[in-house]
Image 1 (cartoon, rainbow, N blue to C red):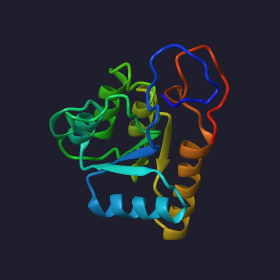
Image 2: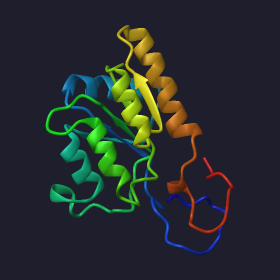
Image 3: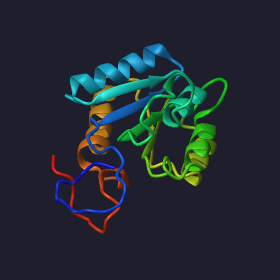
Length: 173
């Protein structure tokens, strides 16, 4: 949780002293690069990490495998998750993330080309925070990513920002 700067004592915090970051989960290297470009173009100054598929994303977030030395309290501001991936679909990844208490509070944005009703219904039923269908038009894509990124990184407040003390004051930015 991020320290909100109000000096309140108590509880363990998550993300205290860590840079804001986003986890991009997409099997397409081109889509990951395009999303990175869109975030940079819209002045996201945080860290962006990538996972090529669901198992890699879960390993990163659970500090397993090559991430075994990572800090489990360093959680992303948001996870941008593709739906249609080999090995493990985005819906299956979401189900796994929501089963881990510490990860259940991390916002998950389903950012995908799939507009299938079943994917949308399943995603929301499992606790997705948002479902965004990637526009095909590049100008519209960049505007959409700017809006999504701005909301989930700059405007939205999450439980991972606050000490576990009773407070509702927003984090200093």
